[in-house]
Length: 394
Image 1 (cartoon, one colour):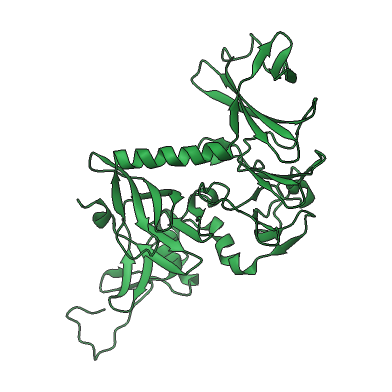
Image 2 (image 1 turned 90 degrees about the horizontal axis):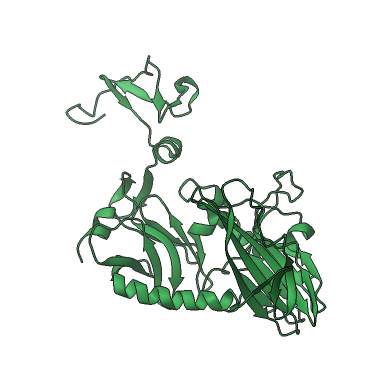
């Protein structure tokens, strides 16, 4: 209550005598610990976290020099982090206003304004990243279609019924493509993944995945993994972690499809989701192309547990968080990452997968989808930029 009002006088504010709503949510002003107040025909809103951050989407930032900054109304320019090297994070843009601009690169110190890359520079980098991703995703192989099924090097993987669709199926369905990829493991086991793409005349396609284990001339399907196989991680005891980041659909990951399985040297498979009764398990860093070694020196794998049961009922549990996992399925909680685990429920981020990036330096970088903010969780550093400075001509 400043302006031209003398400071050495007392003033009385009252509660508004009319209904108050914020973003279509009714405010029970009489029961609020910090209510809205009315004085001199002006309604005043307290800058609490509930009102400013949760309801209005504003960001409250304290600066030792500038004082309190209230930030809002920003256009999102920074998109997902897709690659990093020693010095930079590389990001997709959410908004491009000038021709010729490709992606952005951000200094890992987070102390400098992000730099726009040209479309040519971005294209060359994407080619290198895709080459790294192909190495993790297996070697493409030729599959042979015969009258009785689908074959790989003379071994039948799928029956005719499994690799075809009924002519009478709704939507005029037809098999558009069958793609195979091979993973040769040091134990003499070969894995072959098959991607089946069924096209419909409504313009949509159905993607189905199967993974087959080949030991000698014997073929068996790994029934626990019917989603893309994203990374295979070798353990010192001759076993392997088989990691899937899940089945994408309509811009999100289907619940219950983020899975990790252990394949031993004899070809036995055990699903971590079943052993831990966890609907979804993520291995951070699996999608980081430049991160080769995902295990600790003592052979443990860092995982994120969803806190949802794997019994088909999707019952909430108190297990959400980061853990160390060994090949005996023993887990130990990583308490230092508890705050990071809680980020999954933050309204500032679309999903844990898209916004938490584990760099090749094994540090965690978080993208917040409000106000173009990147947070280095490992070093407790924040980079924040206004849309105007990101979109300015450089």
